[in-house]
Image 1 (cartoon, helix red, strand yellow):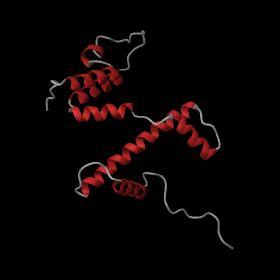
Image 2 (spheres, one colour):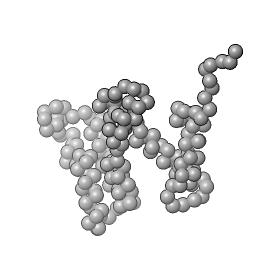
Image 3 (spheres, helix red, strand yellow):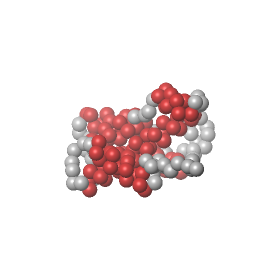
Image 4 (cartoon, helix red, strand yellow):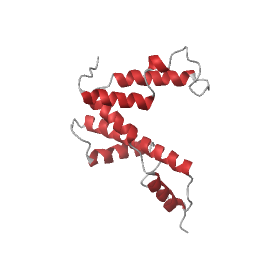
Length: 160
C-alpha cells in the first residue's frame, strides 16, 4: 500500500524518522561510497539493515509512525534503574550496566504488551489494554518460562 504524505504532520514525522535512522537509502547507502564521512569503511550488512528500515518506515501509516516514534524515544531512567539495582544487590552498578538493564527492561515491556494484545485478540475485546489482560499475559509468559520467575518457589531448607 502506498502511503501519501499530504498532511504536514505526516511529512514532519517521516522527516524526523529519516534523520534518526540516517537519511535516504539511495543517497547515503549507495555502493559507490565505500567509506564513511570520517574515512572509516562502511559495514555492508549495516547499510543493508538501514536501507531495509527505511523501506519499512516508508510503508507505515500516520498512526503507526507516531507509535514507532514514541517507541524510539521511550526509555527507562538510568537513575531509577541504578537505585533499583543498588537496593536489590547492595552494589552500585556501572553506567554500562544501567544502560544494558534499561534496554532489557524496554524489551521485556514490549514483549508483555505484545502478549497482552494477543490476549485481547483472543478475548475478542477492543480498545486499550486493561490490567487484567496484562496480568493474563504475564501469567502466560511465566508458564512458558519466558519471564524467568515463578510465583511458587521451593524452599531449599528441609525440616528435620
